[in-house]
Image 1 (cartoon, each protein chain N blue to C red):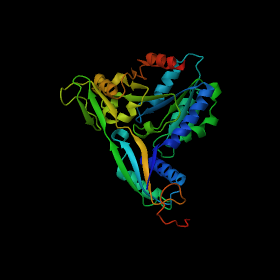
Image 2 (image 1 turned 90 degrees about the vertical axis):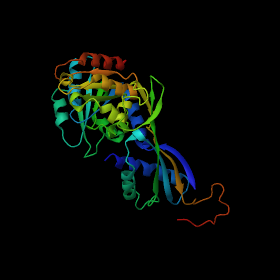
Image 3 (image 1 turned 120 degrees about the vertical axis):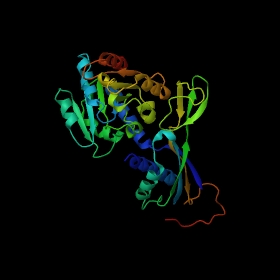
Image 4 (image 1 turned 45 degrees about the horizontal axis):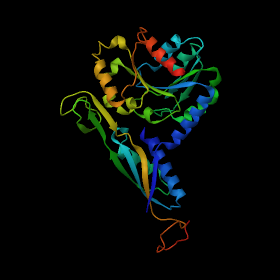
Length: 132
Length: 214
């Protein structure tokens, strides 16, 4: 159930960004999601395909960039990536004073759009269509 | 063509949460977002806490639940102002739900507002409500591995209450292991080991809470 409101958030942020840039169609959405954020990629794409129907984001591909979480050992200083469930001990020295950081990212980095409706900058060689 | 966005996915919720926070601050209310698994003892902790509050600290409660009014009825029976939010199947409260509930709460007549979130150790952590403090309630029967399995929840907590301490031995609950898991994610987060049944540890928890009021 968690993925549904998350997907609504993704769609709304993407549509807003597309509108602000006069884009006609969203081809892809680049997401940055931390390993500890508890989001299932396939599930989000599934909801997205339903929610985006009849919007300019219909058919867009969600591209997930996963950011790892890292543990730092307070005893030997070893740093290593961790996943859920987290380990309680350092694999190098066996110490149990670990600190976990990162892996909680949860944002849209960029969207890829088909075209611009009205000119901002560049695109001079591109044929202008009437739009709408 | 690529358009850079760099915007939090739940920014719309965060925006409403910030507005809720302004309303709470204006009324001078300290707000707790209580999160836990189903059955950890969120309602029990609210009742045990209210019992120990000095008279001048006036409590209020928002009860989030999938469908029932059982918890709200329990709280109301103690004479505490309570508003029920039925999420209609949604697994967490969100900031707009709180905003809708606000007009039904006499904020000016309270100092401490408990928001009891839906029982869930995953989603609730991601949806800001506008509360001052995120408090996670764990309990002995759930086992001592919860911080390792649900890091997001424990990493963002301002305090953790470990309830049902009278059952720690029965469930072979290793408090040190649990505490190390918390320290990994959230160094220095206060941990209160309590039993709402026996009253053990409640005084320390309430003293900390009152210290946050000022």
